[in-house]
Length: 261
Image (cartoon, rainbow, N blue to C red; front, side):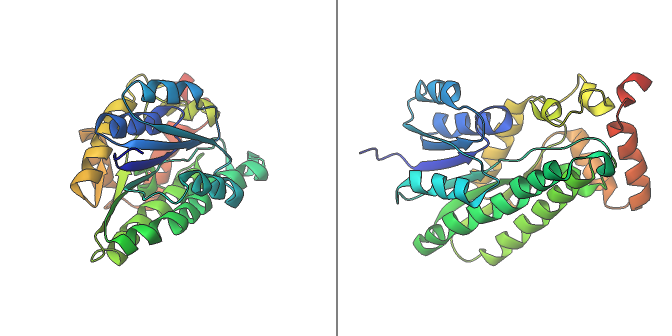
């Protein structure tokens, strides 16, 4: 039986989630990793770092998928929960298939909240634990041509701050990681490769984003924005009128905007 602490990471097949799992493994955690994509390659890499790794491929937008993840934890104490599963959706709201809209909401909000509701109570009961929730600086901006995604991240950014306050005397910390555009499969899955932001070669390295998030979680920080440019953007968003922000976002995310630059 391993004596290493246990970390649970969702959305761990690639991108930020995979690198969060690497951070956990490199810092002495065993892992339960979950995603709606195949995880065998990620698990193999993580085991080479000395971690025991349990794998759950499940639809984390559904209660059944989250229940399958909780079942795989098998009653073990969870020392760190990194709720990272999420995805985006490009194009205008009225052009989107509503099933896709619903899936973004169910993944980014409903599945995340249900996961927290299932796993956090035992952490609170024990009086210790770390939680990292992946929000986004997108939550600061009305997301023209990414309207649903940005709105879900506004919800998550707000929810994480509220949950942190509710748990402030419990021994369980809640940290919100708020990255900007990151070099992952996000934009391909969201059908946004023809946008200015999707085609930008200057996206952040997901390994760097994950390291910043993991460090903030372990330090018990309330939130962290990765990168100076993103920090500046988040500050400006707080004093800029919403319609100005929406127009700025349109220039980045409107279909075909990559060809306009």
